[in-house]
Length: 115
Length: 114
Image 1 (cartoon, rainbow over the protein chains, first blue to last red):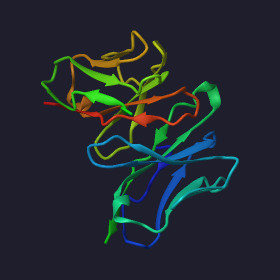
Image 2: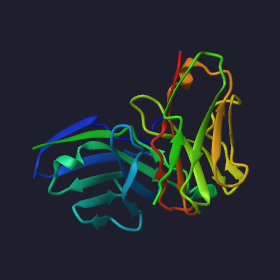
Image 3: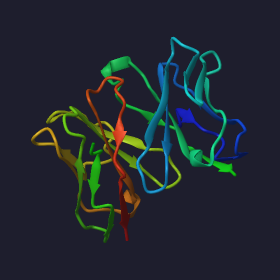
Image 4: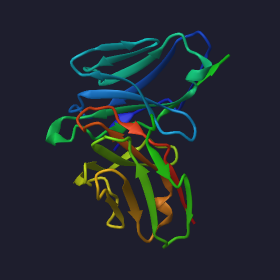
């Protein structure tokens, strides 16, 4: 049973346009969400996070939006650059039981930004 | 500064063979995590260390999997009597502490069991 779902395996956008990556979750105990970026043959790299007490967090070209009622979050990249081409993983953690270090990942979305 | 390193980067094992995968975390990081990433999937949590103490091993798939971090720095993930379903990328991550601190991942060890 997948608790974090990324339903789009891939996304292709033009350089300079907006990229929107989506993520849905089923576990209502999740209260902290992260996005990681992964290049081939490298480990995932932390990109941005959001706590459930917020609905938006921005860091430069990257913005994460959280809709708790819909159990949905999205990552916006504006403007998209060819170097953003990578696999993006959504991850979540829950505070219950003291295991808030444990990340549950989605399957990832491959973003391709075309020059 | 140096990031998380893992060795070997690639490992081919015959079914039934034992393997040992090494992780060197970022210096000074208290917490260390192991994840397993099967093809086409996201990383899945295996186990968590705080210094030398293994505080959570709930994700280890069977008793053939064993992890240790005896001196609170380098960690080894050992898989005994490997099976084909063990084929995956094994990722190690470290963080300064554990709670909600950013986890920094190594490049992973790709294990192929034939």
